[in-house]
Amino acid sequence: MSFNRLSSLESQPTQYRDEPETQDDPEFNRFSEDLSTKLFSLTSNIARLSQQINLLGTKRDTERVRERVHDLLEEAREGFQDVGDGIKRLSGWENLNASQKYTQQKLSREFQASGTEFQTIQRIALEKQRASASAARSALDANDPGSLPYSDSPSQQQQSQVQDQDQVRLASQDEVDFQDSLIVERESEIRNIEQSVGELNELFRDVAHIVHEQGAQLDTIHGNVVNVAGDTQQADIELRSASKYQKSARGKACCLLLVLAVVLTIIIVAAVLG
Image (cartoon, rainbow, N blue to C red):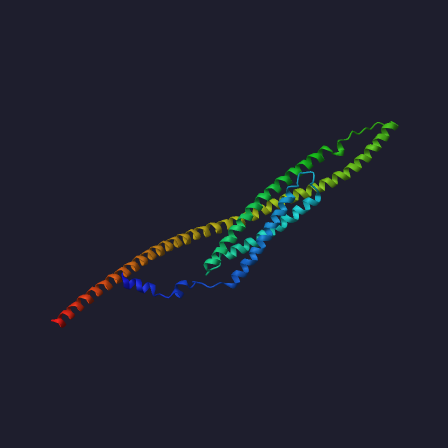
């Protein structure tokens, strides 16, 4: 590398080299901040949902717990659908600077992580709901009032027993009908969960594809950064070497000039004295 080339590099204005290629997009910043807030709410929702699902199938399992599980599942599904659509919109944003691209990729990965956790919780809830509905159905069939013995004997004592049995059947049938309605509700909830699992799986696959593409872009950017860093380091080494060489050359030139000056002085003095 020549000294002229070094001088031209050093004389380039730093303002041009440091100037960013793109400016901040205020709309992107507002939209990404809104998505980040919604994603944080989803994470909190998943934590509460996990706590309630852990109660299913235990002594603390009540209809109130099941209502909370249902409500939290519905809220989480709607939230994931909303944020997922926002992530897909964000991934198509163009003309972003480095900081905004980082935000874009960060939100996509956080959404993917939350989605994976929610899918696991959904599967656990589905398994517990199925087990509970199956056990309740089996218990209901075992306690069917139609299984009680019935006698057609006309004796007074047996007639009294028959009346008692009829009252038991009526009372038991009301309980059976009530329990059967609860089981039907649980089975309906199971179908809703199964349907939402399929719908959200498609959304999560789309986001996973987006994250994969962003990862490839990130690898390319990282490679470029490494190459630029290497080139910069090599250029710095060459600049330092050239600077040392220039200083050494200047010192030698000064010594040579000094020797010439002494010799010239001696010649001049000798000529004058002669």
